[in-house]
Amino acid sequence: MSTEKKPDNVVFNTDTNSYDAALKPYATNVGAPAIVVKENITWKNKNIHKANKQIKAKYLELKAEYDRMMEELEYNNLVYNAKFNFEPILGEVYHLYRDKNNLPFLSIIAPSECNFDFVGSFYLNSEHMWKKVENDQ
Image (cartoon, rainbow, N blue to C red; front, side, top):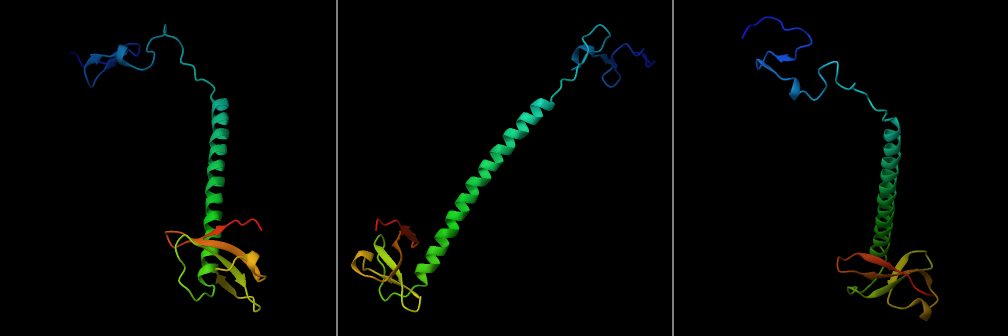
């Protein structure tokens, strides 16, 4: 093979010493269809909008979960810092009240059976976390 320069309209690969026009991913002669770049701004804008909505929805889900966890943490701290003179049993419902000094205390007495300053009812789950119980008073 000769090492002379080929004309520009001849597709010759000097690395492989072969004609490789048929292997190119683009047109190599003047008779081939023109390469036209499609307008993709509409596609981008539509998908940016979809992606932003999806990210915002995920953010709101995570924020709601975070808020729920923070509420559980506050309840746990409130109940564990309350005064009680018994060992709570897992799965049982206990009632949290405030005394005359506004200090929390835990009791087995239901709100319908007393007139203490009722805060809420809680049960101790198997993970030793206090969960708030919604009562129908």
